Image (cartoon, rainbow, N blue to C red):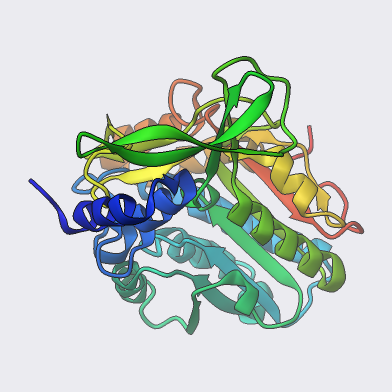
Length: 350
């Protein structure tokens, strides 16, 4: 079956030549009419994937309490800008705010901004957060001035990456072309990039939009105060490897098949984000399981199970999925970007 976005990309490649991987990924996810995120809700069992906030309310609650403590460490500024990048259905923010209400002064200080480009997901967020005063933005750089608390859970992995292939002594930019009418990866022009040591055929990825956002966030936090929490799957240090992947109906799919019908992501380079965020400080990168355990995920799960024994098995299963190595505990990593004057924050202290 020929779908509209695939046909558009085929015509473009046939007339103008192969396109960079970043452009292919950007069109697949963000094309105004046919992009994956522009026209569907991809979350949940009926969608293509599920995120930590959708697995358990505890995830968003702990982040809300973490932010309240950080706000106290910051000196309790009022007001403070609270921003979430890529808020999905608004589930994390709803749980965050419920927990934040336990610190009334903190909750009153929040000016909430959601950075979201998907009309479909904005509608879901409006439903989930009904009655909450919100501002939606297309770009983080539109945030108003002031101290900032920012949360980015599974946001950076969906930004378009460039890919480069090692050929002899050169790096060649990888592109998407056509082979008998089917999309195929091909070699593009040579480029001059800084990359780790690599062998023939190795692939290196650069997520320039992620670096640009981290740079803006770091400069903002360094000048006006605050902290950002980044939670995503990826590698703590810059590394060689092809991590571009597609997921459809909770299963791996072919990256180049059916553009716009599957979620495309790539592993986050946390070292690159930390370096881009200077002069703000970056915490150590810790596994999600370690971070949540340090915040008290297991005692919180115990309280929920005691309060509602009929759901205890589900609560326990969700908790294990969030923290155990066989679930999301090791694959997902957590890093904070903070004002240089702040001490080590909860979750990053042994």
